[in-house]
Image (tube, rainbow, N blue to C red):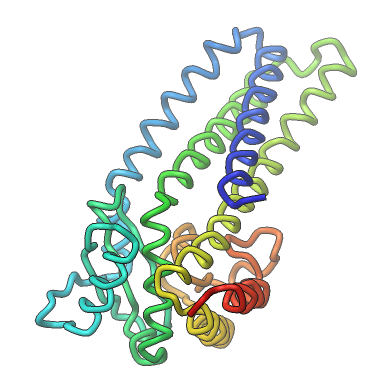
Length: 286
């Protein structure tokens, strides 16, 4: 199953959960499902699209990232220009993040408004081939519009959460006895399941970005080597500043000291990513 198909199926599952919660909320509150869902859908769209539209400025400000010119970082600009041309993308802006923790991320609402950011630690730790592999990974996120996918998943997840809270605080818990209790139990379980689905979508997009990024840079083994180094650095020195809600944007999760359980991870296990890249290298004509 392709990554795109898997993402589409998971998005469909999220949508089904949303409708299920809507039916349960309507049953307990007596409010028509279209009316109750409509309000929270509009609210979530406004909130998440506002974040989507301004996410680049927000994330860059959190990590004090500085947009750099070609004169300031000629080698980095040369790499990004070459990779963007290979990917068929407009060249994004480039930023340096003043963090010793090695990592990188991409942000921006569309390929024409994208920013690729690299930490100072990554510039110091990775060699040129590894850095190109990482940049290819980030450009793949831009090309595949993964920020839009994550925003859509966040909208559905937020509506599920809002409807659940609204129903638990205003619903009639005594409605039809046992049936009402089952519906309440459903409302408690579905938001948790929706969170797992959203995280699964994030992990799937990372696999896709690894593969597509390796094809863009034509350096799957260099990307695998970079992931190995970045994972070790994140485990030994996890990021203690910033916002853990941005973890999905980075090449590897920099907050690993905070988010331990793999079930709740925004990224798949790094060893699995490395193994897939090594297998990909055997099939690519380099």
